[in-house]
Length: 172
Image 1 (cartoon, rainbow, N blue to C red):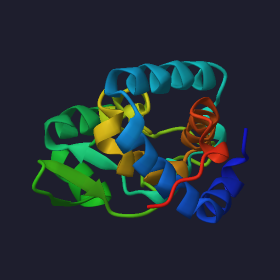
Image 2 (cartoon, rainbow, N blue to C red):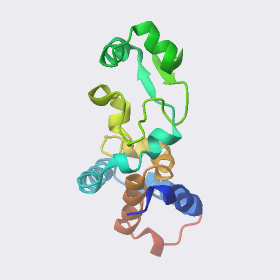
Image 3 (cartoon, helix red, strand yellow):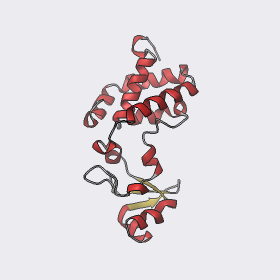
Image 4 (cartoon, rainbow, N blue to C red):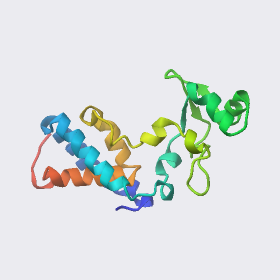
């Protein structure tokens, strides 16, 4: 498995290849089969992976808190809703979520855990979304995740092997 601090470097080196592989998948992969492949690899690789040792996603993105979670999260941190928003969050966006004020995410603790504990937003729990259906339609987000998450990087590399991509010549 690639080290968290090296994933961005290697993803950048493979950017053209990854984009070509994305196109290859769009043109050749069966949507249901690709979802099964992503899910199987996701489950295998995350089974023994400790995300708190990486947290590239928390370091590289703002956190996103759904407006519907604000009261629960504030209560968890023993704050008022207003204090929680004022301390940690920016403006409400069009999707009815608040972004954290800072990158790394304001809720990332020094030990790699999330200050929100069990109240961590579902979008954070689901990242890099490699276990979600519809991967064929969302391959741009996968290519982006490859540069952040060692698991997403490994999944993409293994899929290239499964499709024997490196031994095929494609001109786009």
